[in-house]
Image (cartoon, rainbow, N blue to C red; front, side):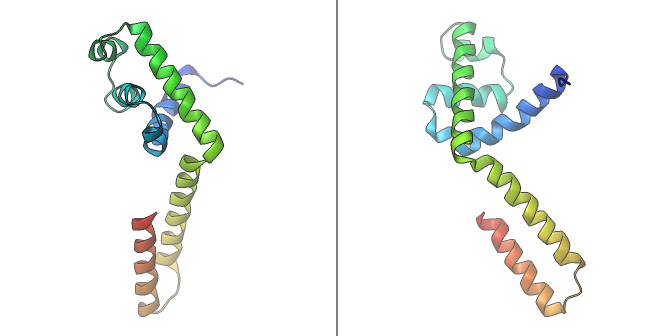
Length: 121
């Protein structure tokens, strides 16, 4: 069964900024700027076109090419997916550590290690 358009749009609004964070440096400056304006600043195609001194169609094409490039990078490298999995595993470990029957010293050491892991990854 097909997803409603609204749900698909929301998923895209959540996914693209993550992909842009992971791979934005690999895009052209114009693509990166257009995608950032679209997905992080919520600018319209008209606003993006005006900033780039181009047409709405050119802005649309620029965004579509950038999105396609981001998806190609993710398909090959999986950085965004690995970051999501790492964050979920870290949250599960933190929850487990909070509930585990550990001595105060062990709990403190485990919490310090988890904080260090969260900070670096």
